[in-house]
Length: 130
Image 1: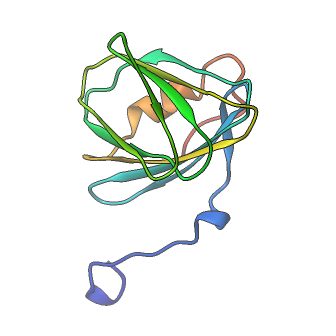
Image 2 (image 1 turned 90 degrees about the vertical axis):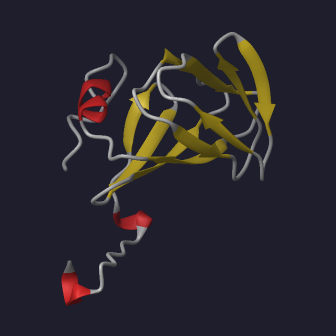
């Protein structure tokens, strides 16, 4: 690691945003052992049901978002956090006519799923660099 401190820093504004699905963009930062993804949802967007092999944490910074987690609906507001266990199907969509911003933390690093999502119809992200 630079300087031998074990700390690497980046400005998320310098990380390119890419479209995941129609109306949903993300900025991805991956470290040695974890991934941080900032999603921004347009009011009429939806992230389809899917599952991941690892647990992830989703926090809501602004807006309200409805999650369907294994058939259980939950609406999260700014300041609230969801912990989603690996392998559990889930999807999400904004509740109101306002943009939603959620940072998502994943451990261990997320690599192959990002590349496969980039191929989803409606995506303008050609691929996610490591």
